[in-house]
Image (tube, rainbow, N blue to C red):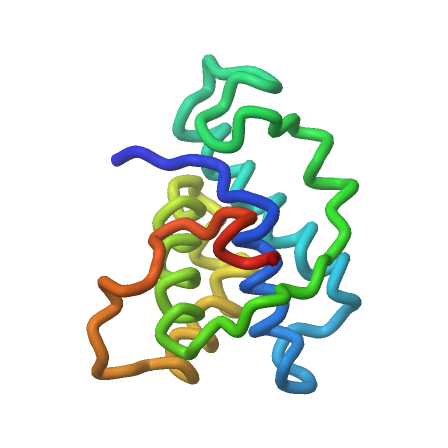
Length: 137
């Protein structure tokens, strides 16, 4: 299996969905985003132990320290329910590689998002990984 660090914009989509309903993910949007990105980094670092800071698959400019400086930027584009579901599925695929994933808070958040955004529509029309142009105008 392969995995990569998701983009900051991808985290923004998930944070927006998680904060849309009170109590789903306690904390500020910045804290929620940092927790999500930290879990993603743990997975990729576990899967690719020889890759160091700045060498991990994902955004070219990504450095491990970016996780701690994440600041939420509200998406300017509307992300439909199917897009949220696809973002959650992609995030889980990229973040589930390390032994602590199943018991992590982000895993619980993604399970809840998947249940709330379950849809019969085809998810093929949504990106697998969100980039800046998919989320922010």
